[in-house]
Image 1 (cartoon, rainbow, N blue to C red):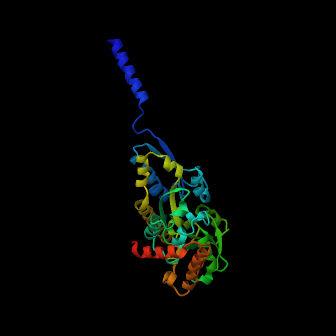
Image 2 (image 1 turned 135 degrees about the vertical axis):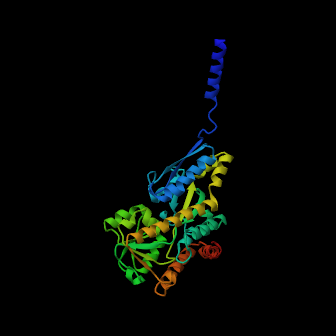
Image 3 (image 1 turned 180 degrees about the vertical axis):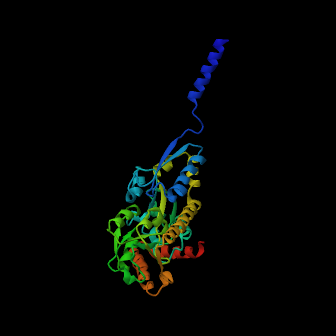
Length: 340
């Protein structure tokens, strides 16, 4: 009897050792981004994406999220995914200059109303194949924009383009830098995480960021004046994955990734950014900061010629390089009318 029991126990042990749990991890994805770990962007969007993929895969995909540019510096994150230093990233398209010029058409003045609006436009441009060739070296999951960009300064009021003269303003992308230059500013290129230290040290006089960025990167601690020019610019973002990693997944796990992609997640990203814009502006109001709102936004007579000129310069430059910028911009304008 004892021998029978022992044999049964040993047989059970062999089965337990030989058969791994159904939820054993098969793939671990390293997800890199540059927002701080305490930011709503990380907690409400990228961490939620990671948890969704893990849950829907039954634990077969594990996602390790690396915030605050700990795996790769902000400007290098797209290339980090391409070379598989990271498997997934969320990054600003303009941080790798001249790589996504057609997609960045959404950044021009006057096109995007808020993050939900801009994200609908940019995701549709990608889905329709108008800009997808710019992403041929990775596997994009979803694209989105932030809300309206504005200028934050330490006491410097800007009410007309002439007030920009001589001011050193942080610019996120070359497109926004060219816009600031036309307004008379001296654009200084840097990723968002470097803005705080540069402002603190007096390297720059102001920062181009949405309200979300002023909140997340703590600029509200250093600035006290904010200039809202409705429709001034927005930024294009992508969450993208290493192509080989995606292709190597079995079909059912690729479907998990596909289900965590596209318009639904573009809209989720937009909702997070629009919500953080509200919080960022409320924080500035609560702190007693000055908010200068330009009447009429980009349609203000003092601003409109300069901003229209910036759009024309951008489109002409791309067309001169043989890119169908006007066709993409025309479609983006149609989408701007139909996206809600």
